[in-house]
Length: 462
Image (cartoon, rainbow, N blue to C red):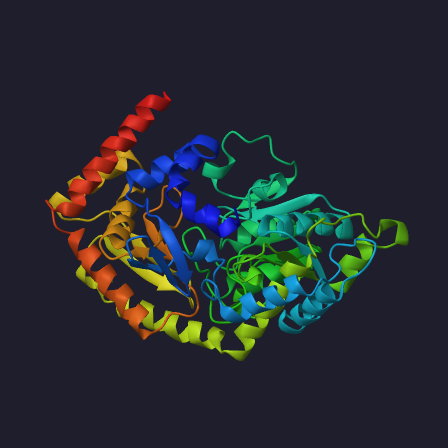
């Protein structure tokens, strides 16, 4: 039986297979909130289920599908490489495809980032940046931001300022120091002893879509230079056009010493990550022939990943999607901004390019406040679910809560959204936010169901 026949035969067994062999809790989550669909096809920003319904994907695989799903130019590049019978992962060799992708990345990254290291993911890229920084500076300490997210392997998790992901996995690597995001005084205090290898941060924090003040990142870079620490920009989610520029760091006029990337570089097909860094850093790590393989990744420079990266950069560059993302994102935020004044639970609409957030907070009117407190008592951040769930079930718009325990809904759609998609988003959000302000109403009845389930879960965990 070929693979397509096998998929067709077992298409509707996906939930039972995952419940039995993979992660049953994920299956429970999807069924509880009504996200248990059987998707059979994907194209651009759309998913299609077995009933023929079309969904607008504002999650894009946590930012992987910047060009949407199954972009034909990337498909063609991968098919060409697969049929060419090229040598792959010889290891005691250097491949032309990885050289070509490194050359292209050097051309589009901020000035001075002349060396490229390839890995398989964002967290691997962060691990490499941490190791390179320590070796190049001879220092061990790493400073990271509260609320930041850099991955789930041990080094990157040690630099992740979110207790939800850290709980139960310690002890973490020593010499990691947390500071508040946006607080230059706290950063200077951490750097001032001149024993910190690097400061790592997302230019825009993905969990919450928190955009710093204009002076923060330039000030952080200046402090790093003052105290001899390196500046690591984690652009795993924000990079490659998502914010309306190649790199989010460009909005702030900052030139980092190391830049981590992944997600969108894959084209949505083959995992790939990379670190761009200054030559002197790379040359210190790989300083002798016997250290040529002192850090590496077995699959990091595989032909399919390199071809996907090259095709992705070509599409971004030639089809104008980065400028399009800036304009479309600006328009969506402008369209949704008036809702803040109309609905008391909606406290802010913010974003940069195709990275947007709706922030909700406790209302003042009595009925709404009582309902809000009921949800928050059951599980902090639960109100967001009475936004994301009807967006999906009623309007077929897939979105996410921006972080654990947050009342922030996040949109990270493909850069390729069109005018009809913009109208789809605005109409869906307007309807759902309005419904969430009707007490009693369908949204709050669903909220009670979620709250009851959350309380049962808590009781069972005791």
